Length: 199
Length: 199
Image (cartoon, rainbow over all chains, first blue to last red):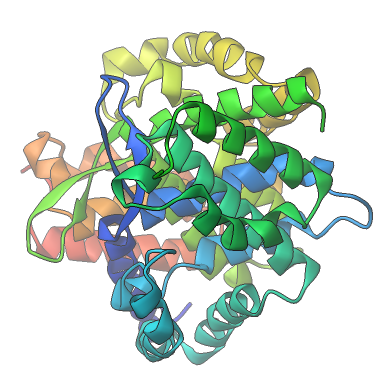
């Protein structure tokens, strides 16, 4: 690996470090009983863990786990420039695609062209959601976000979000496989029992 | 997926959330110029990103990237019970293996037996360091830890660690492939130039 390529990778990694400072709405529960918002780097690891646990439940032919894990590691990198978009912020959602595309030009442009194209390709595949791996990764991503609402402190209620408003977002994840349906249905039961949605 | 299995997975994921509260010595740089210790969940995502960037530089036959990413996602889960062991804390290192084995019994024991065995197997493979994927994952893990020292605020100096004390830990990572040698040598240059090691 020549000096320019090495320096480009280090520059990219120094920038990618910022994903640890992009806050999401979902909260993580501290063992002391408090909670705080999780960040997108933590989220990316957690989505990978969900993928590891659920992959064996996927019907044959199973998506390629390694390809899904690569996509999961790369899927939020544009947030370094674009920030996280809350799933229920409709005004912000309207501009999300344009903001993220501009961010992708910056973030992936720091890499040597071959690696920039590789990571951008993973991000675009995730966003397009058309391959079996992208659909599996999307389901893991949404299940993790929903889980965080349940094990955190019920951020839907605090954000004024009723259960019905979550159905459209969660339906595609539930449809990916019966295991996701089982997992997400259980989480809805817990959220209802804990009165975590806005009334 | 039956109700017991679903509940076991959710219980495990609620426990795994604690990895976001296990602090490491390495620091992450906030865009505002401050820094804070990173946690093990952030670290796991970052190691996956290093693997994604460096995999194409590995000599043929390349390790299986997907298998390495699965190992990386699982490699620090025992810290939920055992805590992180600072790489240069010799007294603590002596008891690390025993503490982590006891922790593994607890953490992986929460999962259904097939999944517990699968994740424990990934952790043990990483720890044993004998497969090409485990060696690649180890090199990514150590390179990321070292990088964090450079882009954070030079924790070696604050912890009283001289450069020579880091050589034994970094040598096996440098030996995995020329790309790791190039990356880590560049990071040493930066650390020396920034006077990040203790004198």
